[in-house]
Length: 486
Image (cartoon, rainbow, N blue to C red; front, side, top):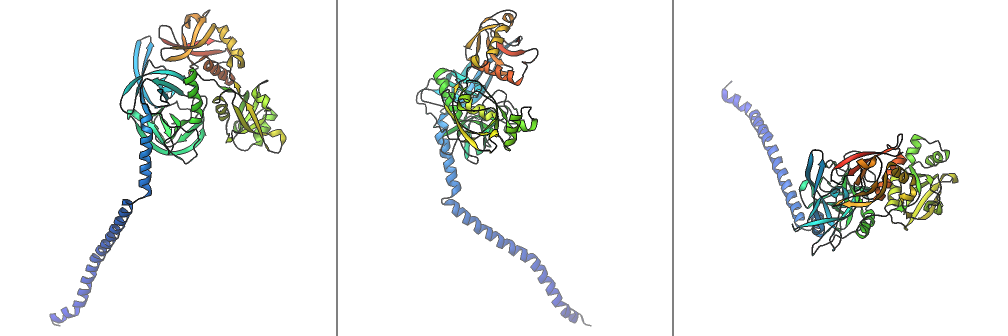
């Protein structure tokens, strides 16, 4: 067979193979070109839409407006302190945040930021520095008020409205010394208790906005730029210390509904008067899990399947007794707000002023029908000298004869006016008691309440009864003293 004949017969197959090869190369290329053209048209269309008015641009503009509305009221707080011990004096500094309360120069921050300060300095948003004085602090809510002498101050706008879960919020402050920073997030929950040892009245706003060391004391605002809370703590684990650790997705803030009352009293009086209801309360869940020998309390806890606070005792002659509250009542709401723990009851009562009316929703287990009762109590004054006379007498027997509110420089505590016996050598007159069992005290009221709660909880006041006091001596040195309470 001739070679041209073979070529003629094999040519179609060859052409088909070439065409197939070209197709394998060209088709994917054409598909890529078509895909690129589609992506290009999509990008151009999206860019065109973004060039016009869009929701994200509006949101971004709104966030910029929040910053513009809030930043002039935000301050940076620098704290200089000294620690004196057997090895001499050690100087140290720390910092936090705050915000301008009024045109008179009052600045709000956290108590743990300024406690024990030897000197305070506030930097305004314009960069100017101003010496500050401590007006007052309240360790039990972790709130402090400073005052600066400056003109043209721009106070922050405030709102006492409690935010709702999902609300967009913004945290301002100086995290890690990055001064005048802003972060955003949402409200993760309200009425939170973090188990912080030193903060007695816990009803925090929980947020996922980044709150880091240095943010403490700064404002938490809503989308209108109104302060709704004071950044105070970072929860890195149940029972973590206030302001300790680094951001782990949970930040806590004191709501303005609590801060407003405390700040106004600190400005007016330098201290805080507490409301007094006169009830003992326990978590319903704890009573269910741990049981109770009291059949009334056990029945009350079991009558409420959810979270609530069970009244375990009512003080004779108290506002609670006058309002008709009885042991075994289950508090499920206060002021229209749902109550899920005994901590929330303490917070609602202890952050209200004496004379305030408190509306309580209670379920009386003995009724058997689960119906709610609406009771109203007019709060009295929390006076530990009256409410815990056994502790007052115990301190006197220990040798602490005369105590009063006191301060030394910027350090607030309980001044020892007179002491006797063995205690006089460790706690001489002129000393300043600044902590009880590791919990800060800024006033005589703080001391009695800390002692009263420790006695109720059985903390070290068992056998033999004693109390660990942190004392600043007249020479400025600090020591822990174990005071027998016999």
